[in-house]
Image 1 (cartoon, rainbow, N blue to C red):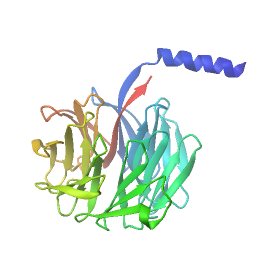
Image 2 (image 1 turned 30 degrees about the vertical axis):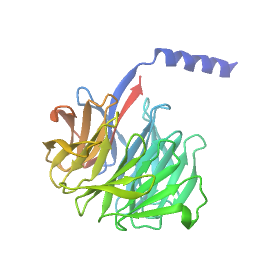
Image 3 (image 1 turned 180 degrees about the vertical axis):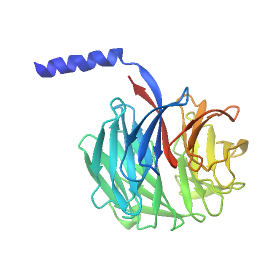
Image 4 (image 1 turned 120 degrees about the vertical axis):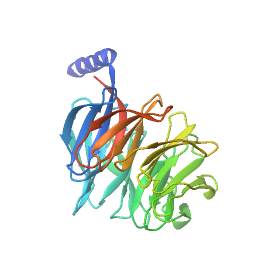
Length: 322
């Protein structure tokens, strides 16, 4: 009887729940998660995280977000999970998986890199366990891109100058672990909406390469950048945003032609990028300026900002329920 009452209560709550956008920013210099109203650009609250929070991903179906506690001097080995409603923390111990980074959520799974452990892992949110680990054997496997179906993983290996490609359903044998040699110090990575193109930015050479995901070969090399540290496709997939702290710029490209459409000078070391559901606004973390700016993608003009804690980096726009 009690279970029936709870079920009816939860169903009733879902009918009256309202959605409200939230902007979540990680301040890795002070170990906090900051919640901002993306419409007014006013801070709502700050919550403690583990040490050195770098990356964040969201499960909007279950109204949860996950934070990678990278650590500072000592390597971190945990995730922090928060309800978008209460923001109570659940600390997830990753054991020997150290320096977690590059979180991506896909269909009930949280994927991440473990830099110190030279591995990629998958955490199942239902069982509450890491249910898959695959070594890359590479130095600083850092950021991730995951195919739409969650079956293929791509990671940038910063000091190995490679992209590692892992097929999750295949045996962990060398013939199923692909390595693509790219330019020096690859970090930024993003998949096109149709999963056909993998865009990779390089911190040292300043180039962006476009890789055909079927043949795993480089098809295009784009120049004109300095440190293209993050790459983000718009929701409809027709445009690409690049944050370039070396050029102090946010750069907008046409995804099909690969040509630059517009550029916004944006001082303060632009790093993390997130885009709202409509594709109208982008939000950029400025890690040295300790603020987040709101940019109209169509006009490439700043339309607001909010002060953050120390060294904001990981950032995500979510549609929460209240």
